[in-house]
Image (tube, rainbow over all chains, first blue to last red):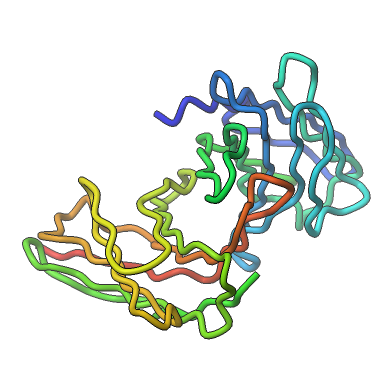
Length: 116
Length: 112
């Protein structure tokens, strides 16, 4: 158990709909990252938040948005869903960076999204 | 971030030592080398990280030659539960606005 929680575990919805995925980072971790994993694209970085502010952006679609709240939990909003958005969505968290070395990211169990 | 190249798949048997080599010819001076493990339908899990020479923890060892253009993850005496995908990543200061770039990874299959 990494200490990162994600809800829901599974989500089935229809094309055109909007969903919200939730992530609670490990206690004390300030950074939250979102990743998408699909069979054809592999594991893709979407976006990072650090202490409530957006810090880095990957190949996140305009239909997708995220935010990190004052209590450090994060939500990923996916709208106008398409069949191709079906994937596993992972959240990861990491502690405040100490100088000189890279952060270890701790991944949650993921949310499996199925768009029908 | 430096590009990495690893074998797509490897097979092994229980009790054997497995070595997975990753090439990163364009590694920068500040880059660290990190390995993650991922089981099906689970999030990746950090295994080990190093900068140079050798690093060992309770799970694996990481060998990095002097030129740092490659690295080898060594898993001693693998078991069936080590069947997973192993990712090699190279980069620096990911926590400060960085991101993890996952390649294809190496799918390790351990057989009885």
